[in-house]
Length: 116
Image (cartoon, rainbow, N blue to C red; front, side, top):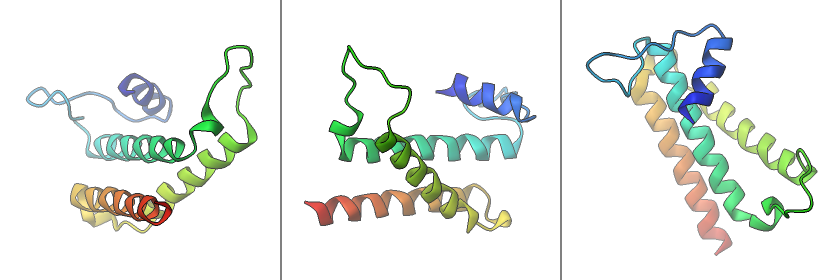
């Protein structure tokens, strides 16, 4: 997951150098912020995919690039994450990012509870 993120970040012009004292964190704040957002989006997307496993089950004989249902779920998840982070104030820092992630988790749990 980190390799894919770093490849994307470098293509986008972000510095992916990590801190020497904390190698799990990036030296540049904006890169660290985007890493946390990247993880939140993947986690949120995995939960959405788990809700409808039959839509994402891959059969060995068929491997379409992206099915219509999968594309719809991906777009919905991406839009939810982007909407949540677009409301974030630039001055909020990592605390704000974590609050948005917690909000997404609560929303996902509430949806799961209503379906159950």
